[in-house]
Amino acid sequence: MPQLRIAAVLALAILLQLSLRKVWPPLVFIDFPLVVVVYVALQREAWQALITGTLAGLAVDAASGGVIGSGGFSKTLTAYIIFFAATRVNLENPLLRIPILAALDATVYVALHRLLGQPLLMPVVQTIAYRVIGTTIIGTLTILMLDNLLSDKARQRRLFKDRRRVARRSSGMPKRR
Picture 1 (cartoon, one colour):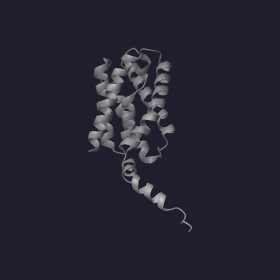
Picture 2 (spheres, rainbow, N blue to C red):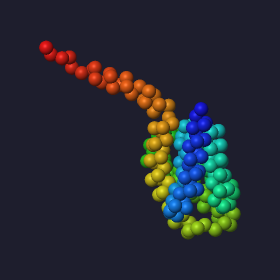
Picture 3 (cartoon, rainbow, N blue to C red):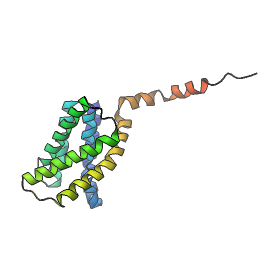
């Protein structure tokens, strides 16, 4: 069941990535599929993270008309590095993890374009800076939202919400007569 939720969120992220760039061109620097890949990799599921990264990158590459494989490779490599780091270092702070991961993905993406001789839309430093800033801002908010929607802890909190409310009301001071 979690795989279906991840697939649905990934499909929504890919649709947002491809459609929002037509609405307002600066939104091309926000990498929605990368945010989903980061979320899955932080759940410490290696195969799910690698498959999610590969599918997200290849789908965006194929639909955007760029070099097919550069986005897939950068997101797969990013998913692996995140999974590896998350098993050894505590990456639970969303303000810390997204900028580092966005910078890693942007650097690999630009390096692959340079290696393959493909032109970038903007200069290298500007591309990396815009991708890091856009993905950091939107990614932090999206990770928090995904954590509230998809995690098991959030589901348990929603299930026991009424019980906590009743427990708080009844735990007051005894009434005086």
